[in-house]
Amino acid sequence: MRALCCLLSAALAGPAWPQAAKIDDSAAARAAESNVRLPALGESASDEFNLNAEKRIGDQIMREVRRDPDYLDDPVLLDYLQSLWQPLVRAARARGDIDRDSDGLFPYEAFLVRDRSVNAFALPGGYVGVHLGLIGITSSGDELASVLAHELSHVTQRHIARSVVAAQRSSTLSLVAMVLGVLAASRAQSTDMAQAAIVGGQAAAAQAQLNFSRDMEREADRNGYNLMTQAGFAPGGMAAMFEKLDSANRINDSGGFPYLRSHPLTVDRVGEARQRASTSGAATPRANPLRHALMQARSRVLMDASTQALRRQQETVPRNDATPTQRLAAHYTRALASVRLRDFTLADEALAAGTPLLADAEGRSAWAQLAGETAIARGQAPRAAQALATLPADGTRSQLLLRAQLALLAGDPAILRDSTEALQAWVAEHRGDAGAWRALAGTSERLNQPLRSLRAQAEAQAALGDLQGAMDRLRAGQQLAKRGGPNIDFIEASVIDARLRDLLAQRRQLIAEQRGPERGPRTSDPE
Image (tube, one colour):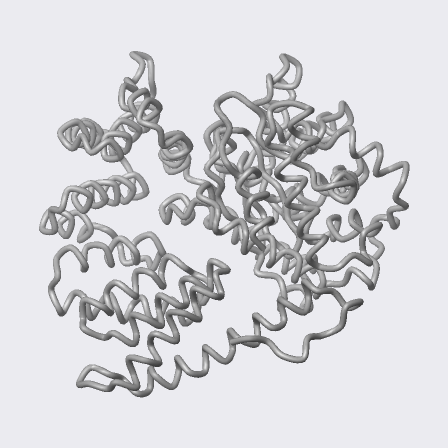
C-alpha cells in the first residue's frame, strides 16, 4: 500500500493558490463516451461491479485519504457540514434513492479536504469530499447544500459504478490504484506532470471511466434539486450556485474552480436550474445565514495553515458598509487566525469586538465555542469552562471533543470520568470516529485505565486504516494484561483479544483482495 500512499499524498497535497486541484475530466469524458457503453439511466450497474465491490473500493480509497495531512477533521466545520448533509441523506432515504441494501453497506459520509480550490467530488462506496475552498466561496448554506445534493445523487444513482464498467474485471487493488492515480494526476500543475503522475495506461483509462456523461450530470442536477427541496433547503440555492460557477466560467477561472471541469456547465444545465428556481417560488432558507457566514470564515482560515496566510487573515477588517453578519464574520476570522498564530491578545480583542453583534442563539453558541477553543489553546481551564457552560447540551461532536480537551486540561477526576463516559457512549455508535477514540485514549490514560487507553489508541489507528499500528497497540494491551496489576480490567482485556482476532481477519481479507482471485489464497498469513 506504500505506492498508494504516495499517490494520494500527491492527490491531496494542497497546491499554491490559485492552481487547480481536482479531477480535470472534460476531455476524458468525451473519450469515455466514445469507448464505454454506459447503461441507460436508471439501469442497474453491472452485477460484476455490485454494491459489495463498490464498498470495498471506496473503503480502500478512504483508508488512504484519512492518512493524508490534507484530510481535515475539524469538529466545528464537520458539525456544520453534517447539518447540511444529513437532511439530504434522510431525504434520499425517504425518496427511495437509498435502498435497504445500500443503506446497510455504504456509510454515506461527507468529509473535508484542506484545499483552497473550489471543488467537491464523489467516491465509490458513498463518500463525498468537500474542499474548504468550496465552502469559502458559497454565499449561503443552501448553495453548499445544492452541491452536496448533486454529489449525493451521483452516489445514489450509481453513476460511479456505471462509469467504471469497463474496468469491472480488474482486481480491487488495481481499481483503487487507478482512482488514486487520477487524483494524483489532477493535482499536477502541468500536462507533463499530470502524465507522469498517472500510473501506466490503466490510470489513464480510469480517468475516462470516472468522468460522468452529460446525461449523468443532468440526472444528478434533477435528482439533487428534488433532494435539496425535499430536505427543506431553498430551491434557489442550486440556481445561485450555478450562476456563480457560470460567472467564473465566463471570465476564465484560472484553475481555481476545478468543479467547472469535473462538472462542465452547459447552457441547458444552467437554464434548467434557473427555470426550476423561478417556478418554485420563494422559500425560507433552512441553513442559518449567520452560522454559514461564520463557517465560511472558518474555512478561509483553515484552508491555508501557513504563517503568511494566517497573518493575512488576522488583518481582516470589516468594511464601513458591512452588515452586522459580515462584521461578525470578520471578527471571527481575526480571532481564529490569531489563535492559530498564538497571538492571544489580538484574539481576545477580536472576540470582544464581536460580542455586541451577537443577535441570535446560533451566533452566541459559535462565539462561545470559539472562546472556549481560545481559552483551551492558552491553557486557561477556568475561562474555558466558563465559556463552554453557556453552550446548550446539544450532543454535537464538536462539543464532545472540546469538553474532552477541557477535561484533560483541568485534570479534575470527576470531569474526566464524565468526559470518558460520554466519549465511550459516542464511539459505541460511531466506531469509525478516530478523533473521538483519540480523545477517549487521553482521558482514560489520565484516569489510570491503561487497557482502555491502549484499546482506544488501537481503534483510532484502525479507523485511519492503519491495521498494523492498531494490532501493535492491541498486542501491547495483551502484554500489559498478562503482567497484571491493580488497574487491569479483565473485561477490557477480553475485548482486546477479540478485536485483535477481528483485525487479523480483516488484514487477511485485504491481502486476498490485493492479490486478486487469479493468484489464489495464501496458505498462511504471518501474524
